[in-house]
Length: 410
Image (cartoon, rainbow, N blue to C red; front, side):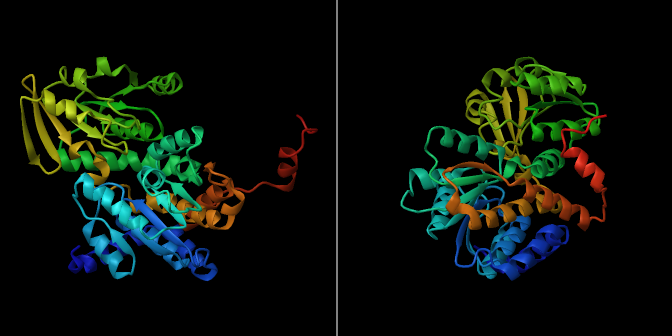
């Protein structure tokens, strides 16, 4: 790690903190209450300036911390250096290979944490498969992909400690998944390609909260939008919002830009690559690099030109040039800087408060996946409104009575 980058990282963190007033306020509260006094916390998160503000909040609450990266291409090396200067153990470096990525997670777990924060469930998976000797009291998961894995572990009786589904809060789904992913995905695509989206056809694979945000931003940029889905309810929702809903087998030959946001693997695969237009752009906004079948793309390619632009590789398939962004990894964090700090203020505030709740409540919880207590979600939204100067109505006593009485009618 290049410690000479620490000053630049500190400036980046300071800039992010300006847009994170809620988390800053929680940090001041934690400094007085010390909810993590004597506790060790290991995190596997994107090593960004916004994450640094979260870790500073936890450290203010008394935690001893270790951090590994949840994506080898998203690490901001200057932020990592600054965190080391702050006294936080960081095991991350931009652009490492898969073996080093997992070694870094193991190094973070050498802290023998009481609590864990995960982004994609890799750290929790290693705790269960390779480091079962570590006794963990509980943890938080930040992503849709990670929650899918955790719920499957719980269903099979494999999950050994309570995990809080931070991803599933109303504020996270609305602010982070919809508005954050929508904006940052196109930030990454535009930085990588410098392409005009107006008038082009964008295919969005998946219409969950992230997919909705991506589709909305594409439409706002003047693109024609096709949505692919496997869920009839979500497909109906997309159709009623005016999107063209088709299977990928039809969309593959029509689209100019493809964006996967499903949490599943092989969403775009060999039979789709072979019918795509010359110049089709392939981007992934799902957590893992499995949504676009890059191995199949490589096997099909007559030739590959790596790095024709930063974060863009060109694959020649049937004489057509297919442009893969960010090696099929998260385009918003690899080709850009991820969500704006104002978005992560909401997500990480819920993360911080949920971690404090776990520190207080773990002894009464059995292994399983838990929703964030609704009062935390409400508190985060209220703090954000206050920080932005927005005021709302409150119920009158008569309205409170009406809502809590079944005897009152029209």
